[in-house]
Length: 245
Image (cartoon, rainbow, N blue to C red):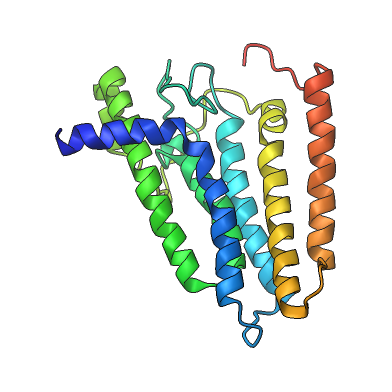
């Protein structure tokens, strides 16, 4: 099997199982904290907490820029196979080809940094790159085969992962705030509960008591309330229903 075929095959397999990568990070982060926690070297809690949360929220914001302008007939949360009725090349896709994966990376990178272990952070970056590089390769093989020259022209102007600083083109669709609310509340709550878990674990290792700092307690409460409200609206009403999307 050629490297191209191998990358494509592995990429499609990873695409189907891409939701499981974050799950691996929880036991790894727990193990690193138990083995490497250093009570003598603690970064000031509140400024560092705000910084890490800001990085994660930046990732969520990038995802919102994607989800808010998503046309019908794209892969989205689909894990069965690659789907694309149209080629996304406007909006945030005009400055980067894989904004969802950039958003995912930043969301989890903020959490990874909060572990306060440089080697864990470097290892996670490498793991993320090896994992998502193959997914991006498989997606681009699919898009190149379906859209041909249209895809090749777009790929010459939009970099794969690190956004360019100019060349933004407004999306053809109107921004759908309802679509964002319907699809992204899980990610916001995952951020809140992940930080809270790590904070409780770090406090336990430092003091031998289970407690959570006020900043992360308030963050957890806010993200949980948003989760409950939006999930209830989605499951029991049509308030978040988006016609045709």
